[in-house]
Amino acid sequence: VIFKDDAQTLASQCCSVPNRFLKMEDFDPEEDRYMSMQFVYRGKVDKSKAEQAMKFLQTQKKCAFAPKSATNKSAMLEFQASAPVGLPNDPMAPSQVQCTMFGNNLFMRRFFDERLGKKHDLLFSQKAYVHHLIGHGMEESELRKARNSLRDLIDDYLKVVSMS
Image (cartoon, rainbow, N blue to C red; front, side, top):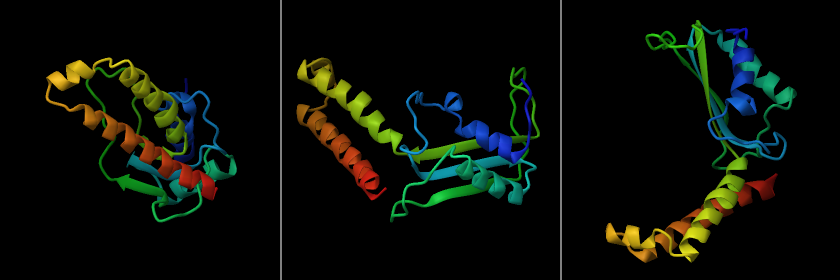
């Protein structure tokens, strides 16, 4: 594997599905638009090259943004003057530049609904772990409130989807 330290390659690698923390096999860049995205670069990177990398990602349809709203700040670049960080005996290839991407996209709606919501409903309907949580001081009504809060969060994502 060849590692390149240029802003465009790093940004592309950040947006590729296998490099994400949350596994999103069915991620669709057009459907699962970003509401916000932040790239944090460490090391020597030219700011104009990083801005060009953002434009490249959009033109190559590696990421798309939801329509602007009060909560949508679009993309943001951040640069830290400190050198890239490495650990002793780290198997990662040494580099002069590091990039980390933080993003909030509409895929999260499906994650919250299909993964968390359904699992919560299944466990709660079977009263699984409820006795354990009550034994630690939680009330059953708090579990219902948590599900309602999750439902509200999903509704917020749906509002953004409807604006698209």
